[in-house]
Length: 174
Image (tube, rainbow, N blue to C red; front, side, top):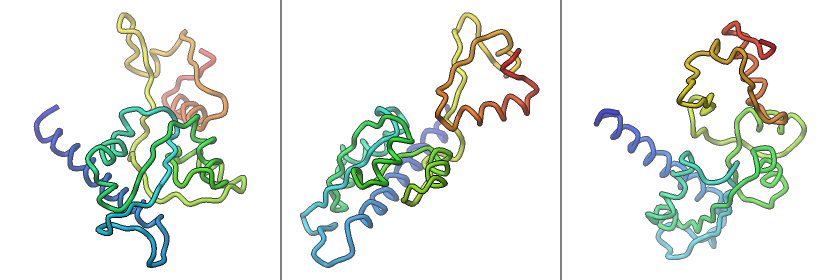
């Protein structure tokens, strides 16, 4: 990646962290007794990830490590998740203040009556990927022919993959 790409990614991450800090500060309540930026006090906020900490969660850990959330009056606790559907449930029932949930999973959960609100997107494109051994790389959907493909049954990526396969002319039956 070139120098411009690195700077662009750092800038995007910084903007995301600061936007997240602002969003979290808004979760602190509306009365004047709430702790906030500049008061020296912090409000506890519990963030439930969709899965275990991975690179995509760096904006949260970076913000905690650099004191960005603390400076905004937020004492952020980051907890591992057990899938987007579970995180949607724990946020909806109040066990967690906020959570990271796959957009498709959230739409499915909301359609079943789970309460909550999606307020921001971390990715503009899907982070889904096909992983293959280096000795026999898969470079296109056609390369999946004759291979075993696994995905969790109860997740949104499964139907998304089916649609992608259909658009490229490959079907799992081959």
